[in-house]
Structure formats: structure tokens, C-alpha cells
Amino acid sequence: MSSAASAKAAAGESSSSSDNKSKLSAADAKYAVDPAALQTLRDSVPWMKDPKYFTKVALSPSAVMKIMMHCQSGVEKGVAKGGNPIEVMGMLLGRPDPITPKTLVITDAFPLPIEGFETRVVADDDDVTNHMINLGEALEKTRRERFCGWYHSHPFDLGDHSHCFLSQTDLTTQLQWQRMEDPHGNPFVAIVVDPLRSASLESPELKAFRAYPPEFSPSANECPDGTLEAREKVRLEHWGSCWNR
Image (tube, rainbow, N blue to C red; front, side, top):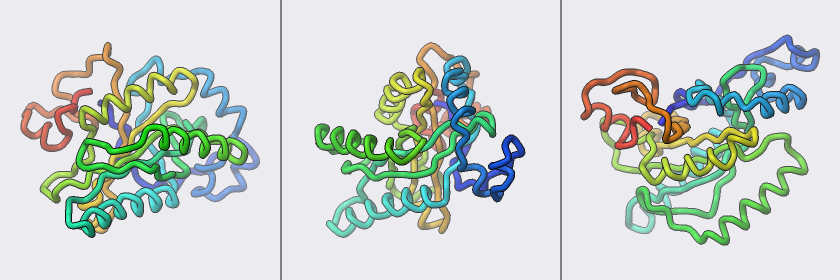
């Protein structure tokens, strides 16, 4: 499980690669699209050759706001019913960035009609599929980005460590998305949110992940953030049981 660094709202970076980009503010330049450069990057699919290709995920402030509001609503809904916070899920709209190498840009987020408890998602597959198809078709008419990822919450008990990691179920889901989308120029990413820790810290607690293909073997004791940790207990506390995939 490779982590494309901790996901956070990006201020963006200016670029002199085109006249249009040079006229944009640094914050806006990150989210401008050069169709030709983007298509060239999609066609070359460098992420298919390097499982560690991506090192950063940049989220627009509006995407972060929508994600956090949705995840917090799951907490409030579960508590209001007298039970545990509810896990929620949504899709991410974005693209690989041809200007800033090895970066995925997330421009928007869309909640899905899925909710569950802990790692067991409860959903009506037909409803969810139809919802995604209809939403995707509508977005294709007005946006240059595609669905390039998904997010979900881990609203587990507030503890010493973040719950931003992939469970075995999450890892299987992420691998399926990557196998379907990555070869077609659309690299897929998973973002995990810890809403209870976010509320406690008064700051978004979320991390972005991509899965290693089964045939890839990372370095011994290498964690998703690239650090080496020899203590198994520490690895499990910080990254869960799928820490090395």
C-alpha cells in the first residue's frame, strides 16, 4: 500500500509553460487544464511502469470542504440514532497533473448513497451504479476531469493514532479500481478520512493511498509514507494490517 503523501488542500503552483497559466494566480494555476499536455500524460501512463510514481495529491479547498462535511454528517447521523458513527463514501473528480510531475489533482468530490459501520459498507449496488453512471455522464458534458478516486471515512474511536489507512476490504476495492482505470490513462487514488480526529484537532485528518500491484514487493519494513519501521506493533498502530501493500 503506497501512500501518495498526506492529502491536504494545496495552495497550487504557478507555471510559465503557457501564456494562459502565467496569467493565473499561483493558487488557480494548479487547477487549470492544458488539454494537450494532459492527454500526452494519459497516453504515456508512467504510473503503469512505476508503482511509486505518485508522491503527492493536491486537493482543492472546495473538495476538502465537501469531503469533510460529508464525513462529519455520517458521525452525526450515527450518533443521533443512538449508535456508532456511520462510515460514508464518495467519488473524487480530478486528473494527473502534467505540469507538476507525480501529482494527482482533485478538484471536486461527490457523495455516494452508501453508508455502513466500520469496514463493512452497506449499499444497494444497482442504485449506486446508476447514480455513478448518471453523474459521470452529466459531468462529461461540462468538465475535463474524470472520476479518478474515491474517499471514505473511518469514524472509529478517537485514539492516540490516526485511523487513516486502508483495511483489507479497502485495499481490495482500490486494487480493482486501479486495474480498471490505470491502464486507460486514469490513475485512481483512495482517500481515507478520520472525522473524529479531525474534529479533535480542528484540522482535516486525511491521507491518500494507492495500492501496490500483487507482483510488487516493497522494501522490508517500509511503511506507506516511505519510512522504515522495524517494530511491527508501531506499523500496525499507524497503518493497519495492510501496511505493506
